[in-house]
Amino acid sequence: MKYAYFLSCINESMTKEVDLSLTRWVKDLGIELVNLEKGTCCGGSNLDYVSPDHFLVINGRNIALAEKMGLDLVTSCSTCLMTLRRAKQALDSSPEKRELVNGHLAGEGLRYNGTSDVKHLLWVLTEDYGLNRLAAKVTAPLWGVRFAPFYGCHILRPSSLLGRDNPTAPSSLDRLVEALGGSLVEYGSKNKCCGFHTLLVAEQQSLSMTGNALEDAVRAGADYIVTPCPLCHTALDAYQDKALDGRGVSRNIPVLHLSQMVGLALGYSKEELGIDRHMIAA
Image (cartoon, rainbow, N blue to C red):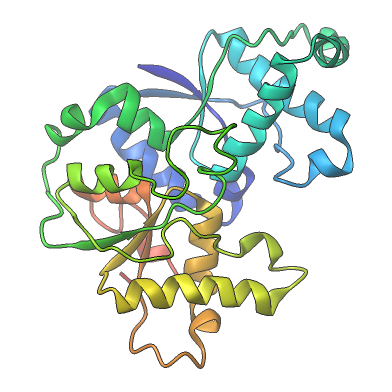
């Protein structure tokens, strides 16, 4: 199994442990991720509102690089997933937009054709690789560990763009936890927003959303929160003390990216997976 891997900005800067952990275990599963070295920032969830044509050119180029390699494009960042898939949807439905984008790409010898899919790492594990196959590879089952899966927004909504999970009752991350031997806790915030994208403009409102999710998971008895998104990880981990301030919550809760959870179940240490780099100790 071989994919082009989109190097998201946050993993190259704030959450380097996501890719660190991923490189530890993909070889154990026989998955090859080829870094999209010439890819550029997807523009988050903002560029398409500021300059729609630049948004399409940039992300059309990212996908065209994967197409040139003959590979589907995979990301471990939910915001990158939503952004790239939004661009793909727009280009696949508009010959005029494809012509615009390809006019810009021609100078690099690139062309957007719409032949490469854009996937999240979670989808690769649950759909392409398969959870039964993954479970057979587990060497250190996560028995007795209670996880609160936190999906966040950008892997669920809008469902017309993403379409893998029911946004009101998602299950893919839950099933991954169970395949690795972990236990699930039910709590109301699993499909809510982490608040990350409003941190710079409305910090208190953002921290309130983060705090709601954290408090909910703690009161449900979870040992860990696990998330498929490094932006959610940043909000829930790095801002945890501020988000829980004044809430009367008795303890902190460690937050893992799904790539770290998989690595633990495949026998890698917390240090090898970069879990010791987190703000909240695990």
